[in-house]
Length: 429
Image (cartoon, rainbow, N blue to C red; front, side):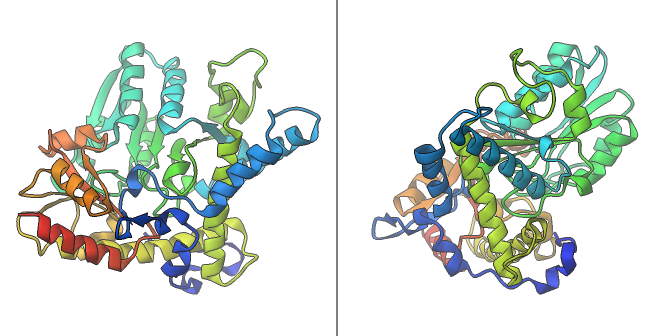
């Protein structure tokens, strides 16, 4: 994807290449010894490593600022300011307009279940909800269960053999009875990026809402809810170098007009209306630190230390995409040289802009689970199975073994890819 032109005269042409050696110095986990060699962290799709500043921010909050919000005393006021600053940073991260459109929660799955239950109160029997056969189950079952409770029908958008969504099928499934379309911005199994803006336009034409799962996409490319045209978007900070905190963006008018389960003294308006109980303030501190890290990465890429945060995010992800696309190209080329390896998803060099640098494959031998164990013994961290993308794994005939998934992030190197390909060449038969 090509980053949009940014404010204050900054644009993609000004962005310098990513200095991955300098990047890695920010991540203590990458420097931890893994036997006789440093570990290769290709497990990012299930959770990234964190910069030192994230851990420092969490520790600092707990040691010096720890308090509940809403009080008159100093640490409570600091907590309120922290939450406000984090909401503003998240607003800029997703491309929103209003900090009160940002809701924090335990994780994306919990937030999605909560939102689905509330929206389902407005649905009527005979209406329809649309999900896809490509999504993580966290963006399927909350809507399926909510639809069942409301007496609604669930429609599923089919996936093509190349792992792209069938847009003709989408046009048939999204219609006048549709109330909501739930779609992932990118598949956490295949890496395929989905045409969310087109699907949101289809939904909008029938008066339906669109919910976007951006968990897998968020660490790889720039989010922009305005460009996507969606109504809700959720992501998880622990996938973009932060702690275990979920983030939900929703259009302010929808958050305001939708009734939600809450205790009586809780706020009736704004984001606090949607946050059940005391928030994870230390986690929010870490989330803000992760976003500050990404913004600073963009400022370095622009060689402009005072670049505003939206421009800095644009620059950061322009540099990240450039680097990660090279990693994906190297890995796909290397896997193509190993007999018996079948890659799931898009492999053509001219289509790398349609996928994230997450590469899943099925070896001829050994099994995916055994191969993951053997890679772990050799200090290559990765995952096997369906990675909760159960419908996609079923649709592609990959169950029960699923795939071996290698997920790269901007802190990974070409040398790590080359090493992993060499290990795989020795293990796959």
